[in-house]
Length: 465
Image (cartoon, rainbow, N blue to C red; front, side):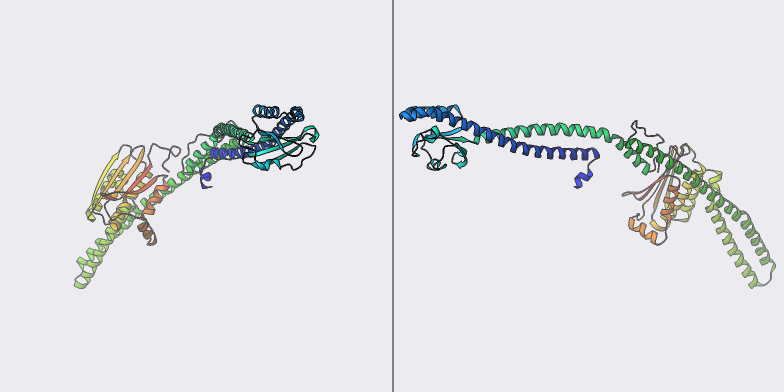
């Protein structure tokens, strides 16, 4: 049953139709066999009665004259001329055998089969050492001169039936094979549109929209299904495009807000803290109280640390290099900062043929930033490689030789609210991109491969998702 469930529709239709045809052939063959057997048995019986009647008529004179030689010649001639006759023998009125065709003596039980007999012909079916026999008794002159016994063998009937059955089976097999080929081809033709619809549905389920309508000239259920598929794909494509535009707008708005907050932190809060530093230094210089001077200097140092952290936060919120110099320079600065602060050898390779758009540039920067944070905090790596290729597609590789990422570590990170990898995946998904997580042992235990749409591709031509 599982095998049948895995078959294609054309295969299932072929199996079902072939099963019905085979069942019909078996039932028809059985009915034909029974009917043909009855007909041939009746025909054999009529021929046997005809032979018995002929022998009874021709043997009358020889019986009356006691010409045994003529009787022997008569019954042997009849047996030779009718190959379905197994034996012939003649009985007188007292039941004695006058002549017979047995070469090794006549079986004793045959003579008593019909008992005393009567004036009418009789036919009995018996099992003998010669096989199934129709034993026919035909009275001679109404029984006044005895009777003729003719044994008609059914072996010939059985052989003929077997021969006919084999012929019928052969013809049935040929018809079945031809029918199977014809039905399969016809099913393939009928289900070919369904195959196209299935392929299109699989592409749509993966987020691939071709934009080409499926056209079938038929107006049947398949044609209606194709029209419904076209409408569904159009609605999904429009929805995906609208969602993509909305998500890009959201990302842009987020980055603009980050940029605004970064500028406020840098300009307003930074300037305020800088002024506070000068004031604290001036107060410290003017006071003669040593304890007061130490307290003011401590407050100044704490304020200076706060200002440094504030400026670092402003850079993280919106790195100036990303706006001023582009993604390549921003990544170089980001990698240089991580090299300076952490004991990780980081190599950066960029091949930017086409400068990515603002949204894509920010996404790449944030992804690299999150990957480096994961490497420093969780992977315990000593080496890392970042390779960026930007053209028709943006392809980013981030590799490290740390402890690696397994499904168990991912689940543990989720439980502990370390959602960096999920943030990366969500950012890639929002941009209709694709992310793969693997390993290139023994050199790299963790490999991120991220692919995004380049500047030259529109939503309609995108197939990353």
